Length: 319
Image (cartoon, rainbow, N blue to C red; front, side):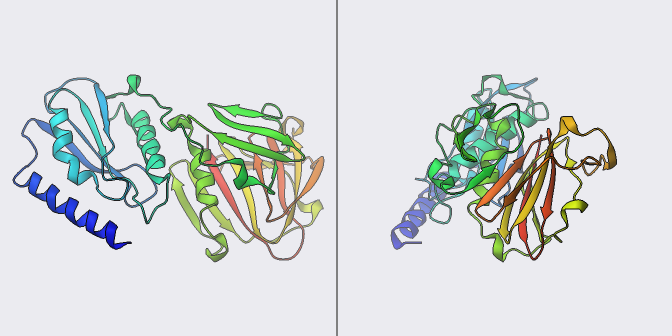
């Protein structure tokens, strides 16, 4: 942290403490504090509403000031409670700050807050009908990030280009897909935060067997699997998850068969969300640390074929 940043924070905190001296929660305000809305320790929010208000209230989301380098929800709680006294439900949250966290971390956290509101509106009597869920008009993952990285999407979901709720994955040819994440609805944010995490962490240093909870709907398994012979690899499929599989060290071969061609179940576990089919894959492709593969529920897949050592991550995105 630079001296300038330290001085800015020091002076702001001093002045804010003077401003708020003697203030407390008004008697007519009901508040719920420190609700987790994201994967980071600082991702917490408060909800304030008038005590005697009935039913759902229109929502104000307070994104605190501070030049992205200073502040938290505690410093703006009295301002927010004053807004709540005027007949609103107010969501006041802390987001990640620079220089420790790089842009667009604050915008990503704001998206997570909007998503949290949409998911928990009934529980906290929030009227989310007037919220614009497409809060982020920016692209975190520009095509340059993926240059030279082959993206294998062997199946069709439902065609060569996939578009679900404005998360666009467009086929460029030669096994490459480009990604555009603009105006991403908060309720369909999983791909954005999954790829943000993948490309901002060094998984070579993370022990095999680790499970990383990125979000309530995004789990990353760090695996060091035992590679197997092709004839041993029966295809699997998932009903409730999308798989993103990324080799870190070593390589493997993946088998693929459309699920529409899988008719005989060998074994299954509904709780763990997998089915293993007896039909053998109809095609195979190689996966190296320069590639990753996305398997949708319509894709039967038989990964970890080969020999030698491999370390990989498997991202599970819950549908």
